[in-house]
Length: 314
Image 1 (cartoon, rainbow, N blue to C red):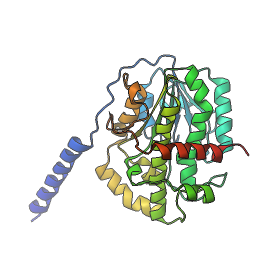
Image 2 (cartoon, rainbow, N blue to C red):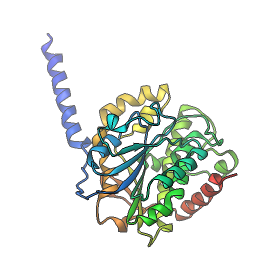
Image 3 (cartoon, helix red, strand yellow):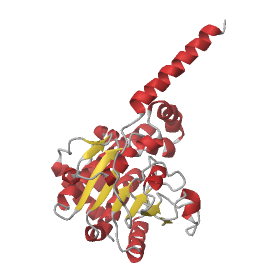
């Protein structure tokens, strides 16, 4: 009596693992770039280190500066080699929900580090509420904090050229749009705080990432600094930082149908390391391959100009 259900279960499990191995194992970064003496900043949740776990093993001789989305649970002086297994990792606190914190972080970094070869804008969330400066949390962290951080570090990136800026976006940007009136009047991407509206804000913020990268590439032409946005292949932002109902819905979906963390990090690594892609600066990548550049250059320029005004010191 049990053989039927048992056999069906085994066949289903086998079919799923075949599906996972065939479709969810994304292409791997093939770069063998030498990174001795290089310095990178990776914004991330230090407690989770979703994509960074792969990066710390790949960049064994690269000096890192780890920063966090919000206040870290570890003391500032915690020995990062005990956490990451890499003695070259330096932890610096950064709260992307505070423009004051972003400026303080940039000042500390520029004071202590002589070069910057890679800036990986990886951190993100899908939380409600507002930032310290009164912006919607998703817009403030996912876009505006990273925008200001990048702008403050541009001179060091140029001085260290060839260097790169890599911003982790999402294929969710295809569902996004930028309501400039809402941003100007309410400092929000969308009004309201329902779960559906949070998802819309997340999509809009990922479009901001893509548009920001396009305009940044335009402004950096000829500087030796190139930049790329990407879909990581694993939607860690929503599942780990969403509210209860989103986690309830997305956790099983993420587990079953999204790539593992190591696979999800490969496109980030590709954009950071792959030689010969400098002519693709400003492009959006997925599965270690470039897709078309954003077509709305006017929106990209308008977003940049608005972001400059919104992030300016009072």
